[in-house]
Length: 316
Length: 316
Image 1 (cartoon, rainbow over the protein chains, first blue to last red):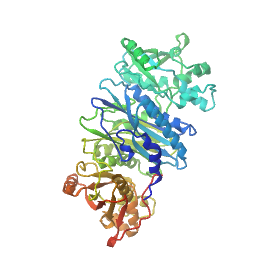
Image 2: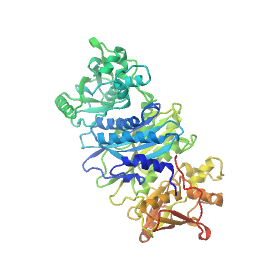
Image 3: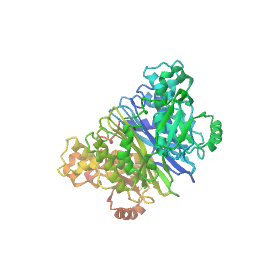
């Protein structure tokens, strides 16, 4: 009996990614024994060609981005990656080499971030490539970090540099030059901050995926607080600085940073700096939470509030 | 600050579906404490308009089908549903009433089958509606059922009736009449066999989603056995019988049954019948596993092997 092409596709490209609990992708479901004494953190993201990535992006980077946007959510909750399930819907004309590249990107990142494929589904689609990934992580009970939980007086911190992803998209669209390729790389390949031990240190946390100002607004609403940040304190890469001040709004409101946004009580600042040094991840304080109606004030040079054109990126 | 439309969409339609661990869909991830002493069963399926359902199918039935195809996989492993994560990518022109119907279907089935929404993602797509659902179930260690594990001499059993979904698709395509609407309903609305306690009874199990003959072939390969079934023993609904003998091949090889296919040792037949009576789910023995090269023989009237045109349905 001849098997349909979907089975050889899975055998060639996805079985090598399968790990413990996956039953080698030979069953209809994975069987996972949860690590004793841990809670599970679960999150899912979809990515569609033309919305979340460009159809001619390199397939290995598409695979890596799919995994990394989910890893970034785990990192923001203080969770350790365990495994993932994935659905892959592709046009019938998608060449085998695309799947090979896509799987190679996933394989590299599985090693980098310590997780394996548990299961999933493949199908054709008459539309653009549509991907979905559900990731499962573990956390010690009581040490998970949420969007809510910040208090007035907590510092507002970010990891890495902000705005590179948004500028990288403009590079991809031909609207900005990028001599070193740094910005384009940051758009295509998020660097999830897995390994920063924020449990017990941050009072609230999330990743910056829809734009710093919008995501900080979410955190304000979740904690019932106002936020004030200084634009000059928001860390920028050399490449983002080189783009010039005209791109400030884009940096502060554009998406695809995949850095962490954290609320940290003053008494935990030293612990945060130590955790950051241990993980080799830069952290910067950019402002403070205050009592008040949930809103974000961004102060520019001289302390003047900036009027920003847009609150962030929506996938609608 | 105005929130993008994706947030009000989630609040209106998906937050009412959220259950324990979902953090009310207000965080980036769900936080789940695994039930002590249980293993987790995880599976994911994608559904794309034009491939897995018809674009003008009623949205509540699309939501139910998305959940039920995954519930069916859990049922085939002997697992009890716990919760699910979902990604929903829709054209920007999708009306609010579509989301309302889609969520209403899910809400009904959450009550029927006992599970709640844990998390997920919404986005737009320039293509057809693309859905993905990852479901999590629980099982007592040692009682999960797999595709592999059948032995020579085990009976081959199915639940319910076989072939209705495949004929229902032909009805939807206008190629078959369906005076009662039964077949179309079976195509649009699988009846996952959640609640049939097959753990410790079935030596192997899977759901019939790609066609009986193809799926039985998978089970043969997984267990290293040959299978022999009798076409006349394969249970057919009144509506499927009324379609006539020309549709026999379609019934045996078409997809979308979502019944269970089980290997059951002779010593467990009484236990299976008791479990089936308890759950109110009909079960029928249709053949036997034998030693030999993995292949499926279907005997027709008089014991003559049938030559079937096709091995089943592929999503490619």
